[in-house]
Image (cartoon, rainbow, N blue to C red):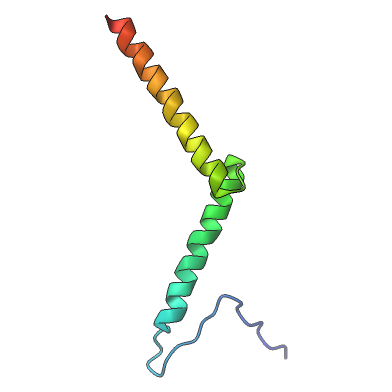
Length: 74
C-alpha cells in the first residue's frame, strides 16, 4: 500500500491543533508576494521603479484627459 504524499503547503500546529501564528503570518506574506509577482507579470513590469513610473505616467495622462474634457465644456 502506498503512503499518501505530503502536502507541501502544510504547516505545523501546536498541541491544540492550531496553526503557529508566525507560520500563518509567513504564509500570508507569501500569498501577497505571489499575487504581486503575478500582477507585475500581467502589467509587464519587473521593478518597483517601473511601477512608480507607470503610475506617474497614468496620472499625467488622466490629468490631461480631464483638462481636455473640462475645456471642451466651456
